[in-house]
Every structure is written in C-alpha cells, then in structure tokens.
Image (cartoon, rainbow, N blue to C red; front, side, top):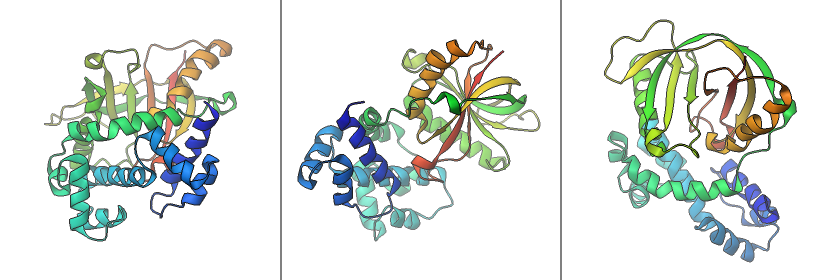
Length: 290
C-alpha cells in the first residue's frame, strides 16, 4: 500500500469507528497528514464523495441493514441512530440514496438499486482497506467438531447475497434459532475473483440438532465435517479478509507442510453488523486440513 493509501486507511477506519459522533475534521486531517483544506479535496478525489457524504452514506447503509434485518426495531429509532431528528428528513434522504422509502424498503428491499448505490463506494473503500497482512503467529490449528447445519444455498452473482441473507435470517427467526444458541456459518466454495458470477456458490448456515423439516424458505440439511483446521480470526467486513485468506494459501500452507482436506474454506460468524459496528464484527476463518 502507498503512503497515501495507508494514511487514508486510518481516516476511513476512524470515521467508521466514530460513526455515531460528529466529524472531527482536524483529527481526520491529522491522520491523513494533510492540512484540513487539502485533506477534504484529497478525500473527495480518492473516494468519489466528500467526507460528510461518506459518513452519511455509511449511516444510511447501517440503517438499511437495520430495516431489513431487524424488523422489530422502530423506524423512528433507526432514523435517530442515523443522525436524523425526524422521520420525514430520514425518509427523504433514504429514498434519495436507495430509491425507496424506509417503510417500502423494510417490506420489500430493492437490493439491486441498493448495490448500484453502495457497491462503487465499497470497492473504492476496499482499495484502502484490503485487510491486514496475515501474521503466522495468529494462526492456530484446531479440531473442528462435525456439525449438522441448516443451509440456504446461494447460487449466482454476489450481488444477490444480501437478499439470500435476508431470506436465511427470516427462516431462522420463524423457526426460533437465534445466533446466541445456534452458531452461524458460511461455506465459501469459490474464489469470487476467479469464478464467473453465474457460477458463484455460497451457503448461509446455522447449527441445528436435527434435520431440517420441509419449509418454504429453501433450507436444506448439510454437515460440516469434523477434522483439523487452520484458523484465523478476522475483524471487520469479511470482503476485506481476502488478503489474509490469500496469504494463508500462498505463504503459510507451503511453509507449514500441511495438506488440504477435500472441503471448502468456511467461516463462523461470531457477531454481526449492524448488531455491532462494522469494524467490530468478528469472524473465524477455517481452512480444512488432513
């Protein structure tokens, strides 16, 4: 990463960390090692939006997740958390950003428009937050127990993952399987950078004690096999774990003398955005070994 990239990674992390607070432009400019005036111009040039607009979009992004995945949370509370003093101004801002009112989005989210709005910013953000370099000292070898899971099989472009996640969450709510008692997993079959979008495979899973009954959600029963795994812990958005995952395959595996088992990379979600801030979300990444 360039020196400028490292500076703006610090800036982005600080804004995300303090999303519920007013912007401190002097502090952010200091982290970027620019004067306040040059900092704001450079931020806009690199991210495509101004500092205040970036914070606003990240707040609205969190609000969208709350609307879709927390049906019990009042819209007025979500508006307040997004720093809007009344529902009307929140509704106008949300509709400008994502093409739907908060109420309409909660009922039937238009994830296509959502991704058209948010993904370009996420891509640019990823240029400055590619994930931490893998520290071999943080890798542990663990014996994972065979685990029966209920799985929703997502097949197709990654842009459909959010809708699949919403369907998965709706199922586990309907059947009373909260994350606090039923561990949450994802099975990552394919490298998204090397797989045609239509062939991309990804499973949303949670642990269960018995096979899944017939249901209208598309859930099926699967087993994550037991066995030895190399495990690393990732904090933050899972997409930004790519650098560590590639280093696990490229650097650690050849040096370790270990051999891979015939099962895909999988992860266990330890907590979730927006239940916790994005930078505090934690995921254990499992690489199956013989």
